[in-house]
Length: 321
Image (cartoon, rainbow, N blue to C red; front, side):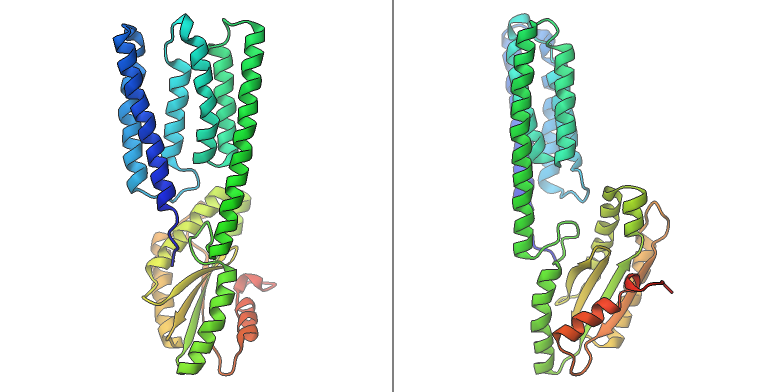
């Protein structure tokens, strides 16, 4: 089960691409009216690109760590700022337009990628556009750019800290979109009480992705996150109405199955396992996955149930069998 708070952010990103597309149209019209026809090509080519990115970002949520629409948009904007022809009296004007680039980058992409793209743009501007200016003007521009880059970086850090705090408050895990452990502890207490009062069974499925830490160590954290996201998508597709999905620990997902006996959990386990074998893959080959079905034992309280869930994880054993 996923708490949807991403669509407004996705739509705001689409609005940014649409605004850049309109600015490109305005630039093309301006240079056409001024008779500087050499400068029409890039705005005319990039206008449909940014318009298409706006539509893509509006309708398609991103499941990857780095939003491909944002990467394409920022690379296109860099290309425009570096290679757009300018007359001598407009060169200083184009320098200051680039000051907005770090703020857009840090809003759309993670901090490390945004910092790399911003510094790459500064290097390109220094090499291609500032070589005709005086040394003092060049140093002043670099100082202003680095100052704004630091402000944008601080904004990105604070923004992501607030996002992480919000995710903790609403109980959502960022990578999987599932509820987190804190929400599970709160919900488990009420589910155990409801199961006792209504005399209905309560089952669990522990889905352990043993390749996750290996992917994180041998390849990259982004590869591990993509692997976990795909496994979460498959697990979510197998949830029935009333089931709830959680991220139990770094490599374990948990499905909470109200009104489900051990037989029902075994049926769901087999279906989910076969689908994971068919659809889930990674750089390490076929999935190495353990799915453990459990049911609430008679007389078991919250602490005992929580402890048994931890002890039932295969990766927590000293040796995997």
